Length: 480
Ligand SMILES: Cc1cc2nc3c(=O)[nH]c(=O)nc-3n(C[C@H](O)[C@H](O)[C@H](O)COP(=O)(O)OP(=O)(O)OC[C@H]3O[C@@H](n4cnc5c(N)ncnc54)[C@H](O)[C@@H]3O)c2cc1C
Image (spheres, rainbow, N blue to C red):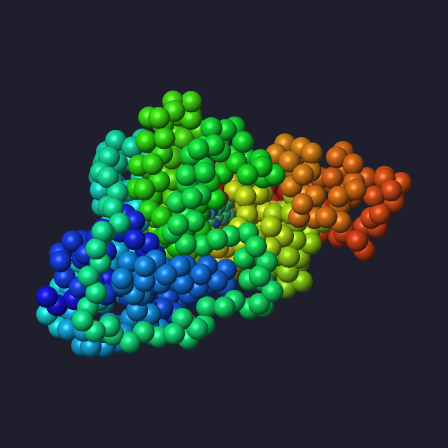
């Protein structure tokens, strides 16, 4: 039999991988392929942190496939050119892909279909990265849901209990393997190199690690998820986002295993349902991106097109990016992002609100920084979340909601544990001043060994004035 090429892009796993499983079950030789096509990704070429993750993830998948008697063929360049060469070298009869929802990857997948048609090769797209396909869910008038709660109510009615596709027991190898590029030629090492080292200490990419993390979460952490998920100093969320973003675990696997865990232990039901609801937000964001493909660039609410965003000067933007704003919870969050490639969700909201509301900078300034530095950078989740905070997105935060970094810190990091971890120069400040060192009496600062402006920055803005400025500007979007 002629071989089947399986494009592993977007789904770097063997479990619950319908495109791969169907190819294996057909009894034909299977050739797993990954093509890095930076040009097709355009402005949304993978950022540094995701490239580091991809490097590790591809190595891990290579090792898993080798154990299964198979290989991962790597190519770098234009997808269509690479694919044509592979089809010609292997005489493949079919190309399988996992369906993508972002506009760049959809364009590539459409082109793959066209070229396969020309070459008389079967092209098939399989689901695998969402619980529901975007065409499956419509509101009562046949339109697209733009509000999360009714979307999620309807989604839960539609999600069925289909078992995730199992890891194939046999992966037939072709008689002759096509050539593969060396992983080093993909140039995935981020710069500067020390940045990767710092991220590496926090993560273990790969499918096996994803499953381990899910199991640990369901065994223990999920019980208190609803109550603790907003406290950044606790390890109270799943941290599955980079594994999902890189396709190392499927949402159906997460859904299925969570349902089994609930059936085994009713006590976790409350936390588990709240966790699945977060997975629902991921679903909602991907559906939005599918139906409104320009959301990474443009607010969903057109009233914001003329909004007077201020230009961020390089120096101040850099202070936000590197956690030098003078507001401890923001600095802790931005430093957590830089050091680990991840930031707690509550803190993402606080730092984002500061950027778009206090500073009145365009939300894309933040979106782009997150895109480069998050190991879980995801076009849909990132764009939808930034728009949610800015107020220009679907089901967005109201224009007048401006997070106060001091009270948010007091509420969600009451003892300043999170701040002390990422902003160690403040570690000796008493709890009463940890969220606002600029309010501490001179004697207290001296005792803690801090001179503001030398050891830790003075606040980069007057929050009261910034809030009034933001409210005046945002007033124009009232009811948007
Ligand atoms: C400004 C901003 C930018 C963001 N950018 C991204 C991004 O690029 N990639 C990304 O995956 N998430 C993004 N998020 C959403 C959220 O912060 C992360 O998904 C979450 O912190 C990941 O941690 P976790 O896996 O422990 O989440 P858990 O709380 O364990 O949630 C489980 C899963 O649900 C999904 N999820 C959770 N919250 C959200 C949400 N608000 N929107 C969409 N999906 C969600 C994620 O896939 C997550 O892994 C952003 C949020 C904000 C406020």
